[in-house]
Length: 165
Image (tube, rainbow, N blue to C red; front, side, top):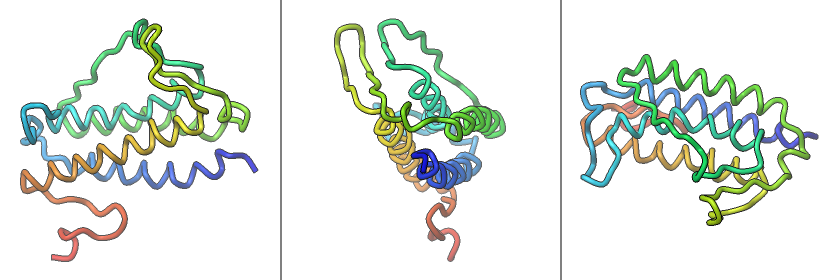
């Protein structure tokens, strides 16, 4: 059995959860920050929506070098624009998820900044840690933001307090 067949059900489930959360964002609170060091709700949402682009960055390349990588920060300011951006990124990632070979998933991938190596690990581990766990971590932050601004939190693993009240 191909490894991607084990990864796909979780990817699809978590993608659906992430999309529900992005769709629930109150645009009137996009500038909300939990403190001065934190990302705004809009920045956090844009970050979450771009994380699926890390699947091609991981599966198609052997490294990410911040010394040579040109990064453009996404800045979508409406829920509709965020969802369109997220959906585009998910569609591209899903194509690779369905095609990736066991051999590719076992290849090493490195994150670096020039000579400074942050980590090297198999691509399957990068996918789990750098893509999936990272997304789930930031979704947790986002649910705390939603609670702080009085917005409803959609259920992702069953109902939330908003669903039963």
